[in-house]
Amino acid sequence: PRHTALLSSRAMSKIACPPITYIKGEEMTAYCMELIMKKWINPYIDTSKWEYFDLSCVSRDNTEDKCLHDAVASGAKLKAIFKEPTVTPTEKQKKLLGLKKTWGSPNGAMRKGWNGITISRDTIHIEGMELGFKRPVLFERHAVGGEYGAGWKAVGPGKLTTMFSPADGSAPLKVDERTLPDESSVAVVYHNPLDNVPDLAHIFFARCLEAKVTPYVVTKKTVFKWQEGFWAAMKKVFDEHYLEKFKKAGLLAKVGNELPHLISDAATMQIIRWTDGGFGMAAHNYDGDMLTDEVAQVHRSPGFITSNLIGKAADGSMIKEFEASHGTVADMWEAHKRGEETSLNPLGMVEALIGAMNHAAGLHGGHKELLTFTATMRQVIHKAMVSGKGTRDLCGPTGLTTEAFVDYVAMALDA
Ligand code: NAD
Image (tube, rainbow, N blue to C red):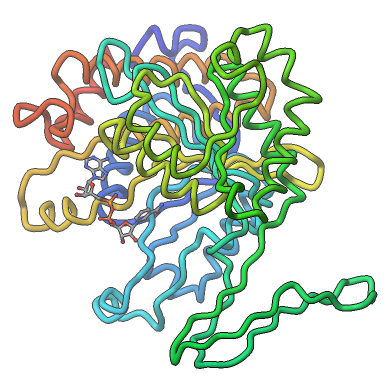
């Protein structure tokens, strides 16, 4: 018989989990998730409604990336997605795996297919264990625009003109004109779409209010004047919908009772100094990428930070993709293949799986039993980590191996 407390109300039958899109990656993290599914999830949870997609390099190569398009379509339909880390193949991996080409990062297709608004990255906290930040740090990274979508050319001396032709057919507009005197320059064009910034603002401020943290909008608008639009859209939503609520909750007392703006270079310093936590930051795409890596580092490990892409379906409902912020842990995979011991901390991935399961529960009318299960699983993992039965990144050389940690938690779940 299985864990009686977990399965009490349904005798010994499994708890039904509503459909989620499960995206499988490869290397060490895929190996570890296989163990976790087998030992922590499958004994208790009926996952027969889940849709699985293999986004390993070989699968993408064999299907000419149809698996990626199918996964994106499934995610748009089911709206709750779990993603394992995936490999974006390099030239070397292309040769090694015999791929037809170096397939691009799947993230762009996902952000586009799910109407990505923001990538939310929050610190994970374990009761009874001090990590980098004492209280939560919430981060909202604009999921679109900026340097990632830039067009560019390497050019010689000459004149560079950037023209804009309005879709309504009205007269073209000169955005910029400049002379490039150097023998060698790089010309770059990018834009920041602003239509979904109000959605990002609502997501960010609602989350900060719930977590009782002070929200900061981070830009370099003092010098990069084009960033004013992001700040203005955030401030408009804040003043109209949240200012009074935040004041009432006492979360703006130290910042002059209005929405604070923080210059991005100052933010890089404050992230190191504000180790008490209790703040949120919202930033442009690339700034968000850099700053959240810094948050992860201060908070001890990329294993202790979530990474959730939030998009919006045509009917206004939220599409949420949950993943760990780290990669496939390739170095441990090599060690594992050589027959050596490894110690992978699975908490970031499991938090993502819990996030997807809980979001699916919310979309399908509650599923209280499922929420109890995920909360218990989290508690059991935390308890193991606090009592010295964690992985080696946490507990040092006496910590457990990848397999022993999975087995230890499986035993505790079964107790
Ligand atoms: P990585 O995050 O996999 O590993 C970086 C370092 O941190 C390694 O030393 C690793 O052992 C350690 N580490 C990471 N997560 C850990 C954990 N949970 N427990 C213990 N130690 C942990 O990054 P990388 O080595 O730069 O990249 C490996 C592969 O992952 C690459 O192929 C890359 O393309 C891919 N990647 C994927 C994603 C994604 O799918 N979201 C993100 C980043 C990298």
